[in-house]
Image (cartoon, rainbow over all chains, first blue to last red; front, side, top):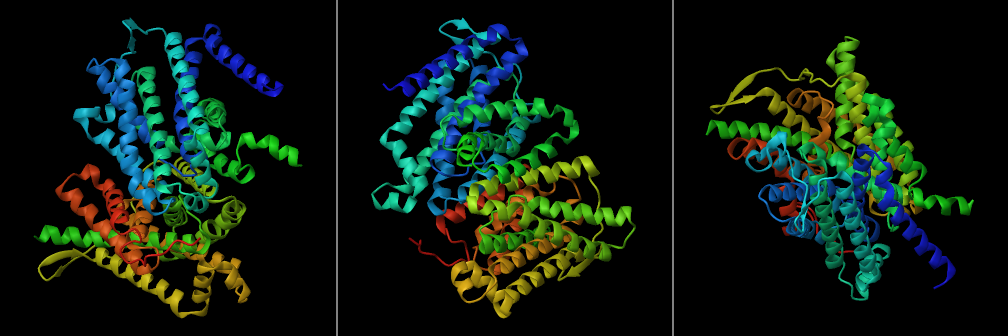
Length: 310
Length: 292
């Protein structure tokens, strides 16, 4: 191992250790924000695969997060073990991702943006209208925290550490995936789809897989989101939330591995920072996006490159 | 049976409005490759502008409309192109998609906070009457909306196919470099597309707001349905946009009446998915080979 690599691994290890120990110094609201950050990072890791590595625009990540969250909440109410809930949420989102992505990606890749936008609106309608299943506008209350190996996780710090472990495990899984031949195929598709196809990579298959795996990550994030907040309602899973997640990836710098981690900090903390704007919050948020895109289309992690080029 | 006819006719009229918005979307997409996710808000803003001119300044609807078209062409046409699209288009589609989504959130909430979050009624340009058409009672507004939408669609088609400017716009849409070589001012042609889009959005606002009522989030469904209408009908012609819009409008009405009003807004997505599976080029579109 060369020195820079050792430094890099060392930095990562310190960051993880710091994240693990951080809750001891925080109050419950701080722990909540930190856990929420982990949840968003998981959803963002998946979206980064779709957007940053496969080059597709998905506007439905909040819809998948919602499907994961409702599945987890309903199954938890039925008393299903949490060890089964997570895979159930993930595979449901994966299957829906295939069903939605297949028609859209078969034609033109921009169509995925339209299909996912409409899909997110449809998810919202289903969450709101199917009272018998989802509780309608009132949502689902009192979602229990998970029980793992006979031990009920009640303390916020414990749940945070569970979420952190999940996040690190999923990030490692994603890193392995990106280093596998699959990951190379994803990058080839984004950089030059026609060339990739001419050397025998099936464009449609790999983009579809990237999208569906991205959706499955959102499903896992949803399965953690439901017990975290304890109460889910349709309003948490709107198109605006999907856009916030997409921004998370873009602000961080899409196609960079740590983009979701940086972007999620901003998306989680932005409502806190913009509190002074009160009613104007969303208007300011919207126009800030435009300004940021015009000024820095490559995201925050592209800033060092940009300064270096000057 | 008469219920069915009334549903069909009002569906066709709503569809005509979707078609107008879809037409603007198609024009922008072909001329410059811009996917505009703020389309719905570009209909909502003119509606509020007209409302402001009517209520605030006491102007009659006609003058308010003309003023609004002018402002909308300046701000949502020229301003939108210069400030948002021009700096972003060279970075590819994704930054532009995100910027227009941001614009959509920004506009929506600007209208909510700066004007009002309430719902406003909006005067119709057509008289509030019902006429008897072969035993079926039809509202004058529906017929007028439909006639106007068809007229504008035909007009845009004629402009594109029969005038020199229109043909130059098509040339730019097909191959910008070749058009430049022929001495066409490509940038100006793209600007025309933005201007027409803004004018069509203002016209859509005039027709759709009396039915939908003016609210800050009225553009939410409208924009998405306009994209779907454009793709369902096929990108290549204004007839396609018209057909797509009308299909969406009618099916929505039928689903709303006979199946479930809650899922009315999901109809367009399903129709879109079915169409792109079986006829990816759209109902009236020409199949295109991929260029390498």
